Amino acid sequence: MHLPPTTSQPYTSHADSQVAACPVVADDAVLLSNGTSLTQLQLHRMLPGRRWVFSAQWQGQAVFAKVFIGAQAEKYAQRDAQGALWLAAAGLTAPALLWQGQSQNRPEQSGQAQVLIYAAIPQADNVQQVYAQSDAGQRAELIASVVRVLAQQHAAGLVQTDLHLKNFMLAHGQVWSIDGDGIRKKTLSRRAAYQQLSALIGKLAVLEQQAWVGSLLAAYQQVRHWPADIDSGQILAWAARDKAAAVREYVERKIFRNCSDVVWQQKSDFVLARNAHVALADLSPESLETAMQAGKLLKDGNTSTVVRSRLMQLDMKTQLDVVTQLDVVIKRYNIKHLLHALGRSWRPSRAAHSWSNAHRLQYYGFLTPQPLAMLEKRFFGLRGEAYFVSAVSAWPDALTFFQTVQDHALRTEALRQLALTCYQFYLLQISHGDLKASNLQLDAQGRVIVMDLDSLQQHRCARRALRAHVKDIRRLLQNWKDDTSLYNALLQSFQAVYVDRTPLTLAGISI
Image (cartoon, rainbow, N blue to C red; front, side, top):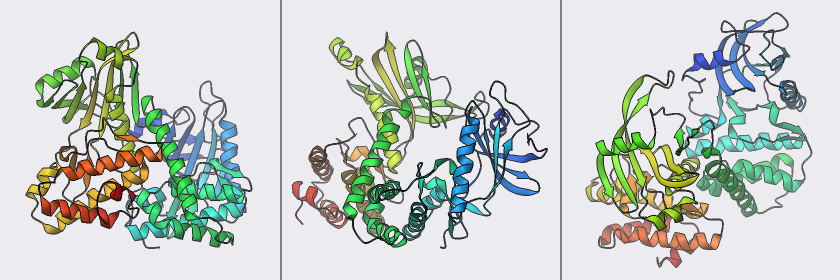
């Protein structure tokens, strides 16, 4: 399997302080109970208070070390080690467990730290990273290899309970199984095995699911020596269900509390969610109002006010020093009158919807301005005015793009990308609600950036999703109803992209 090199690296942002935060690290090393030590520590993953994962040197060789602390450290370490031993016993390609024991340093109030040391995989890359950096043909080959490994795990009576592409590594064209913590000894029924396959397929982009499901199902069945006894449509249905549930958990719950992507703050008069990877200074209703007063007014409506402005960005390491002034768009959702205030006070704000939908689109791989913060004013728990802050996207809107583009090939690609974006929305049962040209931007490669996410929603009911999608198509076409050439070219792109022609027929697009 010939794939491009990736840049699989440990954390680089404030890495030294994160390594030092591990309670068993002393002088940049972990002393072990057998008298040896882990040195040259580089942090790769961290779950504060529970687990650190380092690359390191141990007895002259490169290793990966997992350090477990807390009341259940022994339980989690034993489970991880047992999973690794099961993988090895089944003959699956997995890192060798070199040592299991304890640290000499005892974390305060947490008992002895448990340490597992695994052999490092030479020149290995995370499958998720390789997948993201490969072309379509390479991706299909890579995922087929992962599916065959999954089938081997199932054939050996092993189940990966935390099924993600990041739990597989690629080295010299071979897929490795990692993360013994998620491995359980269990013989799956045929239906349950297929559902696990669908969960893996659900990690892929929706268009790739549609294109590859047949070949991936055949690859799995070939390893298991099973007949073609299930329709690929059932696999896709399960994949869509599982992915939608995962997305809902992320965008409706996870990003409204502290997590790896979000810092959540609750004050007496407001709540704030901000992007954990961008350190913005002093976010409050007062500071946002000040920034809006100093910015450029983009829209001044009754229900919302939109301003382009700048906010101070801090150094991620110190969280104190100002690095730069970051260009942002601040959208304030206004309260028109008392009745409007009462109606909005008990429901999630439109800012919260935009925050949620921006993360939803990013989760699915769509381009949208980076969400930076969401703030809701509160009065005795009741919601008031709200703010949504996003990064500036300076690309032209769709109307301007097609009026100015001179490259015929770029114009054709942009039309194809518009149709592809709409078709993916259809497959995912997402409707935008207002597909006017100003809510879509096109970059230098013709890729679509989706804007103005207030009304965007992902439907659970297929019938409602279809009706909403037909409205989206009609609204998009209306942008160019007076430009016959562009209108007809967009129709042709829709006809070329949509495998399922149902929404096109309902939208009045002749086939």
